[in-house]
Amino acid sequence: MKMDVRPPVLATDGLTVQVGHRDVVKDLDFTLQPGDTLVILGRNGAGKTTLLHTLAGLRDVAAGTVLLSGQPYAAWPRGHEACLRGLLAQSQPDFFSATVLETALVGRHPYLGRWDWEGPEDEAIALAALASMGLGGFAERQVPTLSGGERQRLAIATLLVQRPRLYLLDEPLAHLDLHHEVAVLDHFRELASAGAGVAMVLHDINLTARYASHVLLLDGAGGHIFGTAAEVLTAERLSAAFGHPLRAVADGTATLFVPA
Amino acid sequence: MADGHAAARHQPVNMRHMRLRARLVIAGLMAAALAAFAWSLSAGAMPVSGHDLLAALGSGEGSMEADIVRQLRLPRAIAAFACGGLLALAGALMQVLLRNPLADPYVLGISGGAAVGALGTILAGATAGWIDTGAFIGALGATLLVFGLAHGDGSWTQTRLLLTGVIVASGCGAAVALMLSLAPEGRVKGMLFWLMGDASSASRPWPALALLAVGLLAALPFARELNLLARGEITARALGVRVGRLRMLVYGLGALLTAVAVTTVGSVGFVGLIVPHLVRLAIGNDQRLLLPAATLAGGVLLCAADTAARTVVAPIQLPVGVLTALIGVPVFLFLLARHPR
Image (cartoon, rainbow over the protein chains, first blue to last red):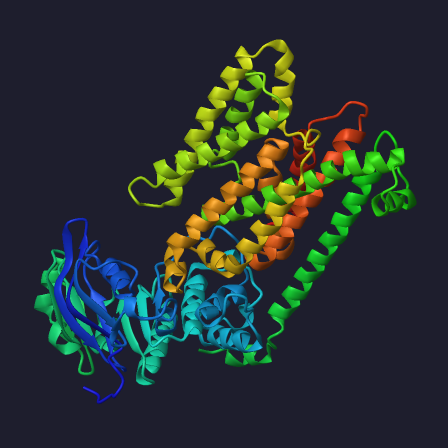
């Protein structure tokens, strides 16, 4: 545990999240410190996205509290929460065309006043974020001409432009090839070591083992296991959560989980 | 990742370049608006030269030309310009609200309600002033009905709103057809003209023009938030937009603009659907530029179309809605084919 005078990036106390009358999580307590990377694992329909949206303050809690940088969402001045936490949502269809640069600049919205226009500084931030996601020469391309993986990297770049303290990522690796999967996770690891907090939904257990400091495993019936990655990632616990037997294979440098 | 220096070479001039282009488009549209007004005021059964036009507008002298320009052509030109602007602005707002490029100001049943109100008063034999009142009440009634039905359980999905609007609109369509078939011969033509859109009876254009200015000024402060809303609700909320409040504002404003437009000139079609698209093809989808540009372009289109409607086959006056469709459809198809996306 790091010593930090700043409040934790994110904390929950007795958090219960429901969809309809079904519990997604019940009585969840955890704290995300600067530098931590939390991965949320669970089978399809377990409520990972619902939980992530609740942690983003976009959904009402059934019980308990969510504290962003030490305060409930409602206590932050309107709009300021968007400077503190950013959400990478699952991709949604675009109905209107826009350029890549225009799209990335959307991330500057929380920093601009009602009548402000993006200035050269905002544009420099956006271009740097695009470059960091390998979209350096794409600024003037129309978004509908991009491939699925390029769009996903554009969505991540847009989130980077927002420069929050807490990054909430819903399946950040969707549509990405192997190289970009690792590059994206490396990028968020760097942001975490620079003092950000990262919480993400992933489906790849082995990338989770490689990048997560903490893991929240949802069983799909309201139960959960939270702990350090080493505590939670065992063949037995993963097999139970995913309803499919898994085997741990150690190759000397890492432990890999493969379906049995 | 790899291509960091590609971006370093990329000077941050893209947005400035785009904004310059957009300002040029808006300046061009303002010039086009002046030209449309000049044409509208000078063309007709008694052509008025440019010099006489300025004299008629400038001084209070009561020559016959001055009377025609100031009492007949000017109110009509202003009404057409204002309503074109209202419909284009309302269309642009509805397309963002419903995240649907096919949405237009009428999609939520507003024109249907106005038509029921207007035709009902024509059928009852009322005078012009009452027709406007009936249309306005019908428009607001349909708006509230759709809003109440779609908002019933507190959910606000675009599909639900859209479906409710479409159903209410088709119900209004049935009521309109019923009234047309029941109406005495002498009133059917007036009803048809109202349905197709007609600026000839617009004698009091100032409320529409005032609302156009107020509506645009009310929408512009929210333009960047509308850009986010167009990208999806979750994205907008995650970036700090109060989506519920914004949607209410856009819906209410769009409904009011449309109600006043159809009250003034009837259900002129295509302006509200096509103008925002034309402008989007020309300058992109940044609402901060799109909203004023679409407003101007809609005004220019309807003002020019109305002038054409009363002059091309004079002395017969065509309903302006027919002309907007005849001009708008091929222009739109041409532009769409030119921009394969």
